[in-house]
Image (tube, rainbow, N blue to C red; front, side):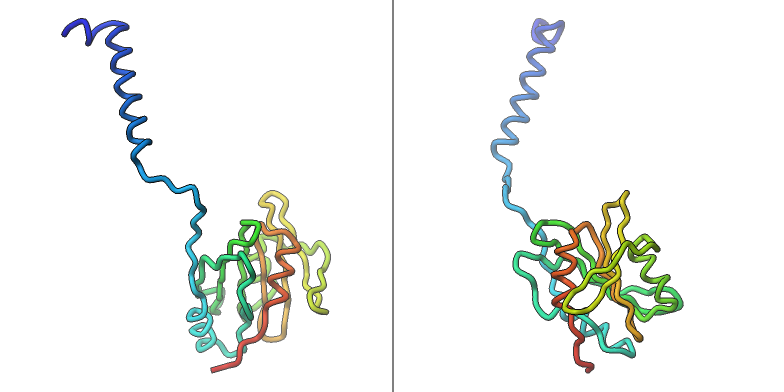
Length: 176
């Protein structure tokens, strides 16, 4: 027995046993090769947000093909304003977040959501101009729209085309 527990031979046997156990584990452990992004329904969150704010809420009119809504929440912004956040995995599997609030000052809200205060141009979506912002170090693109009663922000690692696709499906929801 001493021959199996000492020296190079003992080390080799122990290594072989460990590798064999790891291989056996990998062989019998369940594995999934399919992508799994949890899909979360945001309709109740949007409805609840609409009941708590004094303006008409903006939300997607439909789900885009191959996009996965994967997060939603209502948070407190500056000065007690409520903020609606909706998160999506895009068709290209990038991240996109939509946020809206009547927080004042509106520029402060947009700057915080975009992680930038510098406009780099504009983008026309359905005949409406959205302000573009870009933060190079985070590869974060943002579209901002300032309205009289609410600020809309679409941001994430998605490309400008996907941000525009999302902006195109936004519409005001009826109150109530």
